[in-house]
Length: 184
Image 1 (tube, one colour):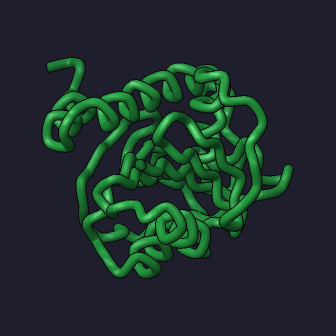
Image 2: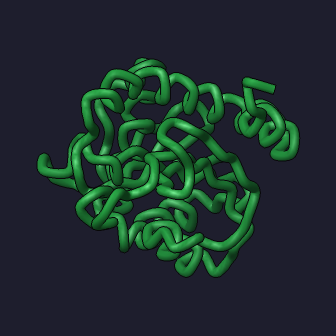
Image 3: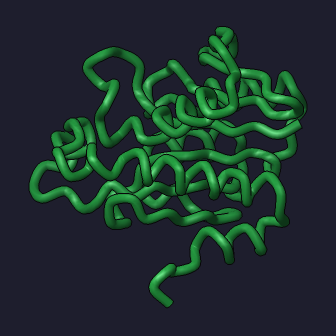
């Protein structure tokens, strides 16, 4: 069993904000794989997809560890079989980075998950949202600008391919594929 958790915040006011990039990716995966309506459990919306649990925590970003740890404990999922998808201001908009482990890098949702699991060895897919021009909070909780909205479908398709690489390759090969610079 594997778990893919897309991070975000519940509520219509957050629906298309930069901080909900993980939720947008989870929704994109659910629609593109015809998963239907989600079920509710583990303080989350989730879909069972073959031997994969696709999870959208409803706990608000900073408490994502509650939802993820409940699902992980229920299904007895190994930490290397978890993929956390979330927004990252350290990357330009749309740039992806797949990592097998590491610190939370200042992301409160990932901090909550790593703390709840007691482990830094949790794979994650970071989706770039670009650097905040001024207020970090206003930026991440702000809605995508026109250029970002235009390119969002391509970003989500790229993220879907990254998830597919994580599902079908060992983590090192998947990282090589996902993190490659297409201009090189």
